[in-house]
Image (cartoon, rainbow, N blue to C red):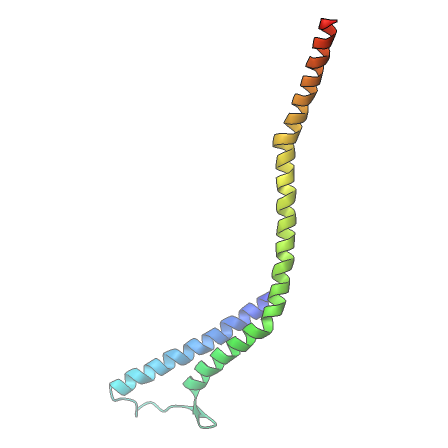
Length: 121
């Protein structure tokens, strides 16, 4: 689902960007006084570049609102999995680097104390 939402976000972003670039091109043509040479396509009386810009922005906003709960759910699931893996990794390093050497030292200490007790007796 995330890949589909990502692709859809790119598509609406591209539509808005095309609309902006088209409108900027029309501004440049107007500044050069060549705007009468290029016909402006319209849909239902509205200019297509404006529809692309506004439609892309509104579709992106709607997509963000609709996808937010699903993305949050997936993010929480991934965070739990990452936290669990991190805790397991830290426990493994703590066991290998601290607890196991400490247990060996405690065993050697117990043997030393037993040897001292036998020697004193």
